[in-house]
Length: 291
Image (cartoon, rainbow, N blue to C red; front, side, top):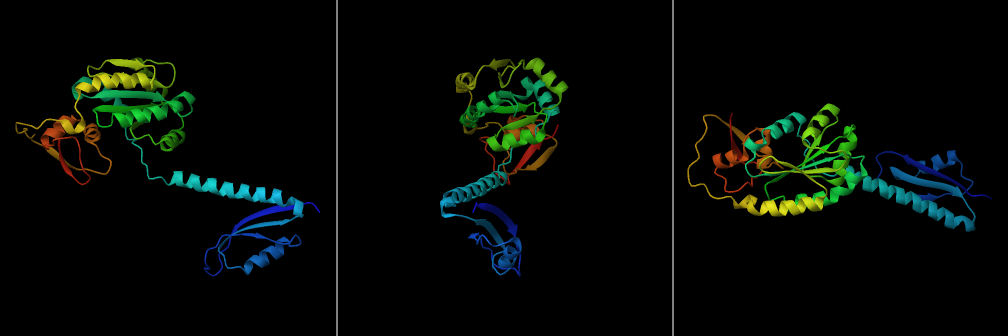
């Protein structure tokens, strides 16, 4: 007799019975009606049934099939853990805001470098660079260096999935509009991805051929820049502006991010609130200068 394998995955809910998962091997003579009748007498609410007839020599093949089913279930569980990951990326940056910041760079940035990365989730070279870029970001997290990745993806969902999958924790800008991308490319000149740029303190834009080259340049330039917790104490009392906005710090906020949101210098927020460093805590109330 040839082996016949039928896989049934179904959900039963009989009188709120306890949950139980299992695999049951039934006689080859059991038809679909008998199968349902038999399950009706079982206690589980969730049941996995495998129904087949077999010869002893076919058991090896059957066991391999069962292992394949279990492997598939394990893969679905792993995928679920990715979906439920609490990581929330920073995708609040807009093209208009970034363009204004570029135009006003020398007036709003006194001692902060920019690392700009043009990429796309469908580009293999872009994806292969991300692990190195993540290490670079972690290395200079405590230095006044701003990281921004600009994606030219057309599919927003694909872009968001790539960010989540790779856990990119710095600022992300979605730029599907060809005209907007073309305008930025006049300043950040490139024809391939990834395109990595360093914006110097004087506003000069320098193309980098690799993450390693970027790391070497940052190592030299940041030696003269203070760490976040090494800013000097203020000797003079800062002059409080006529109008201020009270802002409650939320989880994940940074002084840099708040300053960008309100379009003010982060140094002004630091001075106004008499902060000895750029470290802030959730629930802290900050005074924001009103323009």
